[in-house]
Image (cartoon, rainbow, N blue to C red; front, side):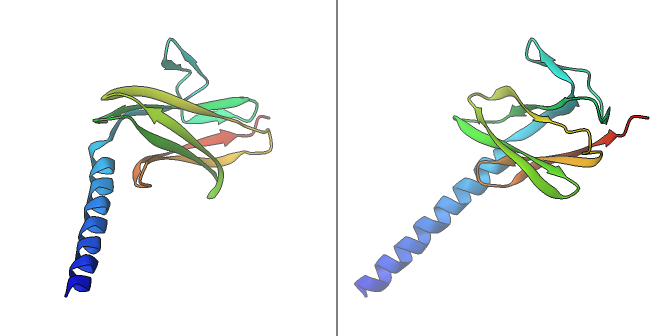
Length: 135
C-alpha cells in the first residue's frame, strides 16, 4: 500500500511539472517577429521577407511578452526544411526584445524558416523568408 502511494505521488508530481512547462510556453507570446538586415537601438532595420543572396547576414528580431520570470526561447533556423542553427536567447522580463542572426552563403538561395520555441520546446511562432539569387 505504501509503495502504491509513493508511485501515485511520483506520477502526480510528474504531471504537475509537465503542466508547469505547458503553462510556461502558453504564457509567452511573440508580439513581433521580423527579419531584417540589421539592428539599431534595439530595433530592426531593413525589415523584409525577401533578401538577395548577397545580403551577408539576416537577423530575426522578436519581441516576447508574458514572461513572469527569467526564461529562455530559441530561434531555430531552417533552410529548405533542414535545421541550420539553434540559438538560445535569455528572456528577462515581461516585455523583452531579442534577436539572433545567420550568415547567409551566396549558394543558400531559397526558402528559410525560423521557429521561435519556448524553453519547453513549444513553437510560439514560425515565419518564412526567401533568399533570391542575384542576376
